[in-house]
Image 1 (cartoon, one colour):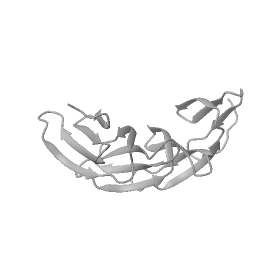
Image 2 (cartoon, helix red, strand yellow):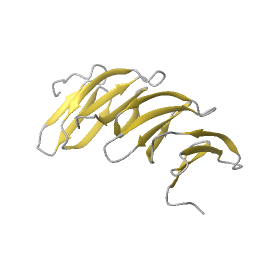
Image 3 (cartoon, helix red, strand yellow):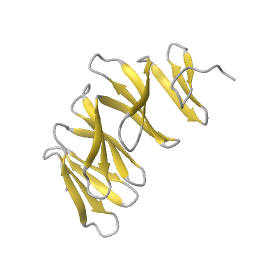
Image 4 (cartoon, helix red, strand yellow):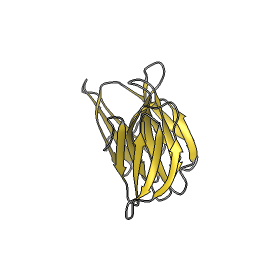
Length: 164
């Protein structure tokens, strides 16, 4: 029986189980249930979501409503490859990169393009807190806000581009 503080994420090859009380993440083989690895994750209470690529898991880790970090862990052994401090709200793999929406300590929101292998920020773009919709397609990122404002960004540079 799982506790109220446990979470399960079914991934392609493994099932990730997070015990929020003990703060332990366990990867279990999806076919036979055997433990592949276990990892202590300090200072978090909740994992908001997990995405994966061929080598890594990317976890949105939360301390509380306003604080957390984004963590890349190796699928092979669970080792931490890198992390980015800040509360992640959104993450997507698009065109070989990670795109994240973060809130910083001053409660400013940013869309960030991240190199998956290193966690290095390639660019960032400040966004308004009333963001209501986003779409990633080919040569553009479209951001729509509750105010009616729309922005179109280049995925390559993060700079605004003109509408076609």
